[in-house]
Length: 324
Image 1 (spheres, rainbow, N blue to C red):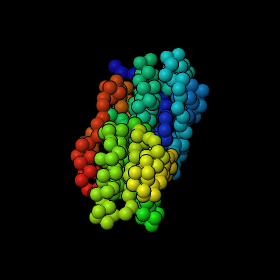
Image 2: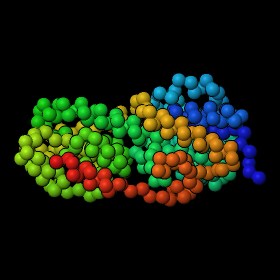
Image 3: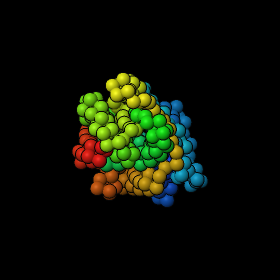
Image 4: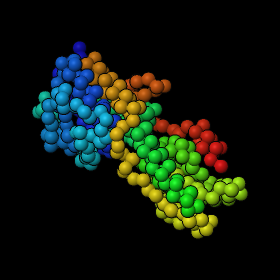
């Protein structure tokens, strides 16, 4: 006999990602269709601890599917790694009458959910992060929008790069993962793509490639650097010192986390939110919703947190082969 879920809480935690609103919308409307109350928890685990909670209805999520960011707001709660605050979070759920929580966020958010699960609060995680670094899922909400935003900006930057015969060294987000950098680099025809998962040699991977392409008549260059590599300004200065080519660093920054979500992010978020509530209704708790082979699946939260993710080596070969 499983615990009947009458009221669920939904929160967004960690970095915001385009499509989070679509996920919240799907959670709210799926739950209400099944007679389950929904409490919106504002500002992630901080809001839970502080009781920043309100009841949501159908109109609470009207006109949000196309909006970036999150209507529930988000925050990083460093205190929630402390067992004392985790216990307070569980007690707050009991006080507010919340039977289960849907957590939309990344790895750190899921660790908080796992802690609540261990304290008896059923949880379901939905992967929402532009970094695409959740190991159990092939895709995370916000990833497609962030890549498209970066591509659009680099395409504009290319005009200036070409006009001045420059080398543009562009840093994209991704924390310690190179998924955004790799795909954006291929999509923009970058000369070189530097990612944390693969060590690079300045002379072999950048300078030698520049010299080789110069012999074929190329005079401007784009180098994509993943956030996890860093030192983008220093790298641009070193390229200029070694080649004499005017080299400029551009750090795209948090603009990649904003904007209206793409169709893929809206649909994926909606599917994941729907699946999360169905799990709770069936008494299937403490899972992380994921995508595998383009299908919605779910994993035990402890298993999900123990999994590892690797860069597709074929994609690396594609990047190296066609960038010359």
